[in-house]
Length: 98
Image 1 (tube, rainbow, N blue to C red):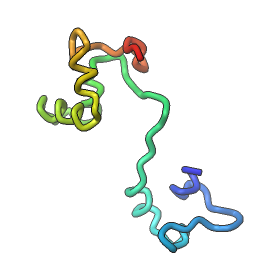
Image 2: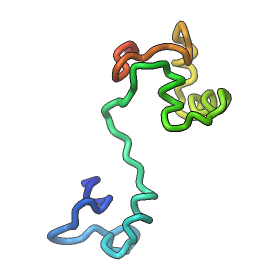
Image 3: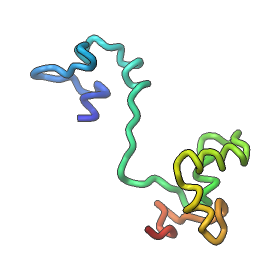
C-alpha cells in the first residue's frame, strides 16, 4: 500500500484519492516529500547511540543530539543506560534490551 501511495507503482484498477485529488494528478516529488515511512525493523549500527543519531548529520552539536533524544521520547531510557549516549548498541541494537 505504501508503495502505491508513494507512486512506486501505478494503480492498475481504481484510484487513490487524497483530499479529493487523484494521486495520479499529484507531482511525485511533492508527494514523496510529504510522506514519511517508519519501518518496524530497527536500523541501528554497531556503534554508540550518539553515533547512530549523528548518522548523516555529523554537523549536529551535542545539544542537538540531546534535543533529538528528548523529542523522540528516548531521553529517560538513554539516561538510564550505564554509558548514556556513549552506550554501544551492537548490530541492529542487539545490546539493548526491551
